[in-house]
Image 1 (cartoon, rainbow, N blue to C red):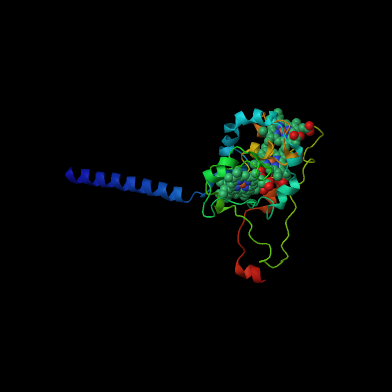
Image 2 (image 1 turned 45 degrees about the vertical axis):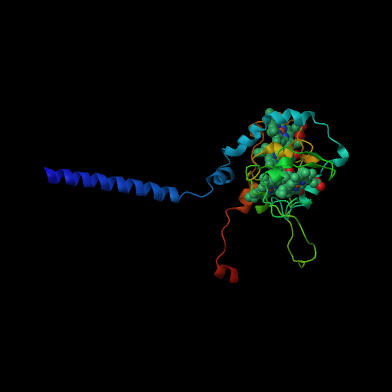
Length: 233
Ligand code: HEC
Ligand code: HEC
Ligand code: HEC
Ligand code: HEC
């Protein structure tokens, strides 16, 4: 009897060990960035779309904000400051402390935007205030002469104004959604480029009407580095 109890106890213990190991192996095999996978591949939920809803109160402010047209940004200005479509823009102004990574020193202006007298410009709102190490991705441009010219060219950005099926129907979203979850940050308020500033920031639930055109994502596909041998062929 005693022996049977011990055997049973041991089997139960083994079972627990197996279940726990299976679970942790399963967990470690999940993609590191599940959130982006959802956004890019399935085009379903965007958990961080919550950011747009969190900014709901600003929508009406944006709608009513007076905008000085002589200080508006155009899409050309917008693209000029990016190495390619979707690349992080460089910091076009001086920063107080070169060794500062970001956070409040940037968000005091970039969280909600507004006019900055010193630079005579409206502040573009950061689409991702939760990524607090701003300078991990955004750097100032210090030189135009150190690098030699190469055959690098920017791919053209998707065009604007012809993304709707019929006149008056909502245009499809021509860009990918990664780092674009917070629609209002780029599409509303005086900091938004004039060509893409919406007439209706108060309709918060943007993707109720605007669907995702995943052509760009399909074109890019999943990135995989070619093997050296493929490369040499
Ligand atoms: C993980 C990299 C990363 C981090 C960290 C990051 N950004 Fe960005 N940021 C980007 C990319 C990429 C874009 C360009 C998105 C696009 O244009 O498609 C961008 C765009 C922007 C824009 C332009 C929005 C517009 O309408 O023109 C601003 C402003 C900005 N970021 C500010 C910030 C601030 C402030 C922080 C820190 C709180 C920050 N970013 C942290 C990658 C990052
Ligand atoms: C005093 C307010 C203020 C502070 C602080 C500030 N910015 Fe800015 N930022 C602006 C304004 C205004 C512009 C627009 C400049 C222009 O259009 O000439 C801008 C533009 C930018 C852009 C270019 C966006 C684009 O779409 O081209 C980036 C990137 C940026 N800032 C990042 C940062 C980072 C990172 C920090 C913190 C180290 C920071 N900023 C601190 C006001 C500020
Ligand atoms: C980082 C800034 C940024 C964010 C965030 C962003 N967009 Fe855009 N959007 C752009 C730019 C820039 C264009 C112009 C085409 C391009 O460059 O991709 C554009 C184009 C569009 C267009 C086409 C407009 C036309 O007239 O053809 C639609 C619709 C749109 N965006 C919807 C959205 C929705 C919905 C969201 C939120 C899920 C969103 N965007 C988030 C920058 C942004
Ligand atoms: C109830 C449906 C609906 C919702 C919700 C909606 N839109 Fe639109 N949107 C439209 C329609 C319809 C048009 C075309 C308007 C036209 O051609 O006059 C449009 C046009 C646009 C354009 C092209 C520029 C313009 O204003 O005409 C952009 C950019 C855009 N919407 C972005 C957004 C963003 C960002 C949101 C969320 C804050 C949003 N939309 C919410 C229906 C909607």
